[in-house]
Amino acid sequence: MTAASPGRRNAAIAFILVTAALDVMSMGLVIPVLPSLIEDFAGSNASAGVWNGVFIALWAGMQFICSPIIGSLSDRYGRRPVILISTAGLAADWMLMALAPNLWWLAVGRIIGGITSSSFTTVFAYMADITEPEKRAKAYGLIGAAFSGGFVLGPLVGGVLGEISPRAPFWAAAALSGVAFLYGLFVLPESLKPESRMPFSWKRANPFGALKLLRSHPELSGLAIVNFLLYFAHHVFSAVFVLYAEYRYGWSALEVGVLLAMVGVLDMGVQGGLVGPVTKRLGDRGTMVFGLFAGSIGITCMGLAPTGWLFVAAMLPNALWGLAMPTLQSLMTRHVSESEQGQLQGANNSVASVAGVASPLFFGVVYSMSVSSDPVLPHPGSPFFIAALILLGGAVIGRAVTRRGAPADASVP
Image: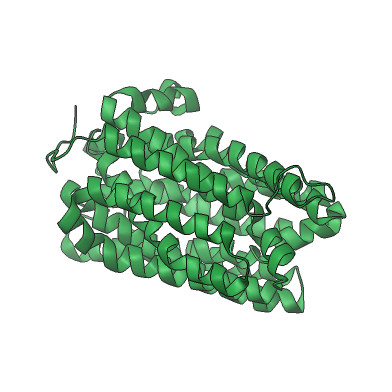
């Protein structure tokens, strides 16, 4: 069964968007409480910054190893079984973390989560299967909007549940992942036609072999660097934001959840409503560069904000960062064949995972150096300033490596 007919295609798109929203909502539920839980086990705010970075790096490290394998398996056996297995695995992982009695259990949970959260890789490959190349930026924008929709409710509900019990959000996340699995089991059609499938090969599936695909075209290689920088900068939020908000503004788990919900609303508006019109006016290239530049301005303002209200105001320019990811993805998909879309997304996720290993460790240490009793760095917003410079570098590189006026169907080299 494939998503070839218009009816099946619409049902498939609806499922992908709902699954994306549920998966991100389940992850968003634990954001307001996980750093605090780590802090309880670690003993101090500064130590929690380092440990939180370590856990995020563990998750990303497993993604680096497993994402190319998952992407290649989806190119061989189809997208549907990979998405279903990944979603069921996430449900099991959240239950394990809900029962964690110490840091080591949490570490095991992060490792399992890194393996099972590969549904994101296959979601993008699925959308590439059923969408024309010139429409992929808008389609990826819809996925981004679905992610943001889940991110609206996740942290908000997680903040509320966290006031009741720090473990409650984990049980709620497990339930949502279970719902996504059941929904997919009965609704999701296969998107990859049998004749478009590629034999599985460990040469392509190992992370270093998968990265060779990104060197197959000069523009693709440059865009992979931009992808790395984007993810590296983005992890400043997952690594230090909750701890930073508590330290600098005294925000509770509920207040952090409300703010993250506001971030999700803005991202949903940008990716769901602005990507299409802006790409029509500026093209994928111009929209990507503009989004990265706007994000660098916004995140600089966040680091400078002396009050919580000014931090909230800085979220407005920062939200335009959401224009960059779907257009970057769209540009990259044009340089590989249809049978390599899963491999491309696996390679992209490996790049993101390398950033996910290095960035949280880096920003965790930077944060610790800026808020310790004898700070080495003079300003607590130092992690945000560094992230802004990285984003600005991504904008410069992205503009340099992409060809102005490249045709929309510049697909296979």
